[in-house]
Length: 79
Image (cartoon, rainbow, N blue to C red; front, side):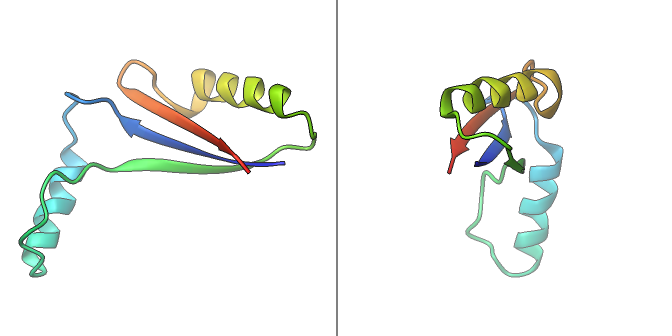
């Protein structure tokens, strides 16, 4: 079973890396770009077929390691 986890900063959390990307895009001529926020994507393969167990395991992974839940949100997509 495969899953994709998307981790993004919560609204209101400053994103200096996103601001730097936004500035660089402007420098490259993409001047109509604004509000760039950066995040992380994790593609995970699980060695079982139980979707409920996969969801539980993936949430535990996010809470323990993949996301800093104080400042980040995460979304899980099981494929």
